[in-house]
Amino acid sequence: MNRTHRWLLAGLALLLTLALTPVALADETTPLGATPLLGNLNGNPWAGAADLYQIEYPGGNVEVTIRVRSLLPDAVTNESFGFNLYRPYGNALNAPWAGEGAYRELNYRAENAATLTVQVYNYSRRTIPYEIAVLGLGDDAATPSLTTVAPAPPEPDTVDAGQLDAGQTVYSDTLLGDSAGRFAEYRFTAVAGEELTITLDHQPVDPSFGRVVSFRIYDLNGTLIGKGTEMWPHHWWDILVAPYTGEYVLQVQNYAPGLTLNYTLTIVK
Image 1 (cartoon, one colour):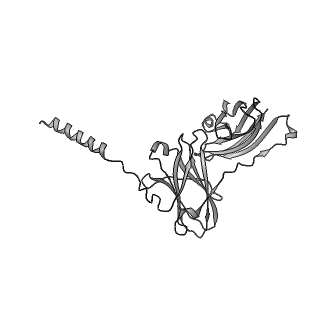
Image 2 (cartoon, rainbow, N blue to C red):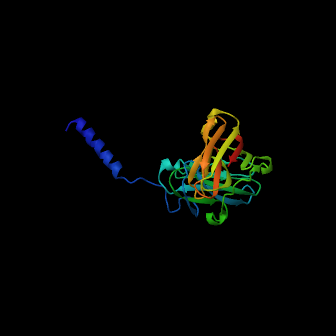
Image 3 (cartoon, helix red, strand yellow):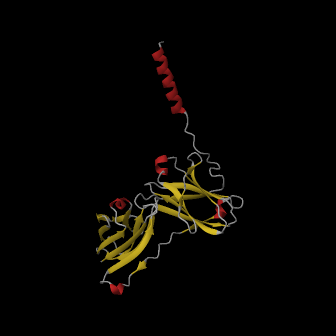
């Protein structure tokens, strides 16, 4: 047997070994170092979906570690999945990968007691089962440390309808951006077949912001039924023909990290 044949056989043996060796995944018996809560988050590639949790932090410079682990061993999907920590009087922190890519992790330490909010997000098209755990509080059991909360829509500033034409509603507000997305939600009602013109005007005016600022319209089941089209750099527009009589959700989006968006949203029936 010549040297070339020996190298070919060695290469084939190596490939067979790799193919037959199972992929090592993170230990699933105690994956996060604490007793986790289980979640199941539907994906939304346009606006993102989120579960919210609150932690009553006791203060006293106690170090708290928050870990979130996807139960789908899919690195591509996991790039669209993670969590943010909202601190009092501070910007949101986005959790990096830890544990050799097995989960995302953030640490928090402060002198004052506070309520911390954890936002688990999913921008993929898939439903992602996950675990969330908190270490550093009591016996490190995550279940008593976390409280599930329902997201509340923001209270926008509104213009008195008496100052406007009949059937026209205007909202003016600001929205601080984040790479994982920040959102303001507005609810409106319409009659089936009714035509609504919806526009979004914003400052600052920069063509590059067209990739990160827009609005989306959903029914109450979370199905996307309309979205803004950029007519020029600071103006978004859509005409919605209401498919049913009832309530709708309109979501303004800002994906520009650290950018405060000043905007006016107009709905004309």
